[in-house]
Length: 509
Image (spheres, rainbow, N blue to C red):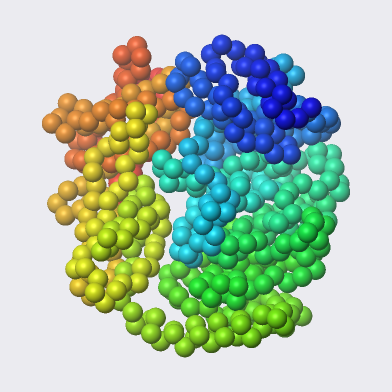
């Protein structure tokens, strides 16, 4: 059974399984493995995304065991760029678990609507996801389904989130859990060893998949395509990938080289860890090379594949040559153009305004913006304020100015601006009950965040607030019990303004 009637039946069964404390809302996502419903938690007044094993498929005990393992796997991971699990359940013939509902879009949606992203934007999304992936690998997990649709972009916080460890497995799991020859993954992003059904995949398989995602981020399309899954898989197994810097001349040579290394056929020829890829991206981004360097890109290929990869198909060979020569001819002009190098050291995205044009800079990202010779004397940046449930922004306004008098300007958004300092409390609620938050309580600068922090929340951002040596953060539950962190000034990071605060039930008085 499939279609609207099947969805209605599953929704009704899920509502009975969850009980009267939850309202099951419409289906928001569907894949070959599971369905996702929006659910309203009436007691805690929060939106959830509940993932249910599709009941219209005759699953084997092994598949259901894999799904249940997913919940235990992800529940062990504690990382700001990995979506946490609130609870797990079974009932009415369904197996399901609940996650926070992410208001935003997937990276896949973004790429389908906008096409290729600028290199600095792509890297600003890639680095937090790589950090999350490194955290998973350190816990002994291989994701096995890295793809744009499994990266969510939170509209409120601006954070990219790695989701759906539905086919992740422990590196030290018993051999019988994933059957030999059982291929799981998505063909456009599948490593050669995964396509061959190898059971003992390691972190380098995820790096191949991530390389395919990064290729699509900067070129607008995956490295391989075809009329069938078999054709696409065959290309992953046998064909060298196109050079990103040839497909899109705006891709820097260092980034093109890093992507091609990720896409090596043999795991031993790739980056051997996420940390190695992260280092390559950070070093390359620090160089700030804006032009394509196809020679550098081909050098990371095995010698037997260099000629094939460096030579475009005959129909596009001359066009590719013209593009590369044009880029080289313009290189001297580009490196002398005025530009602003701007880094966002804050925990929230920043809107940078230059002469009426706005650039959104993600948290932790560094961007290079060419400047017109008639650029205004200053650029203005404003920290984006998270939205409370009623839609009002949380925290205080935090902004600054960048003087553009020099041809090369480097600047950053930091938590200290002029004579003022600000801080961003990140609230972890381990009390088991909803909490209200007041910052700088008892002072003239006291501010209520006008928000509720749900139980189980990890490092929730509530905006920036004026920082003093004796700054405090107080939380209060529905029974008017409270807990307070005081004298936070010395504990706050002076660059980002971040301070992590964890409240437990034992703290409430």
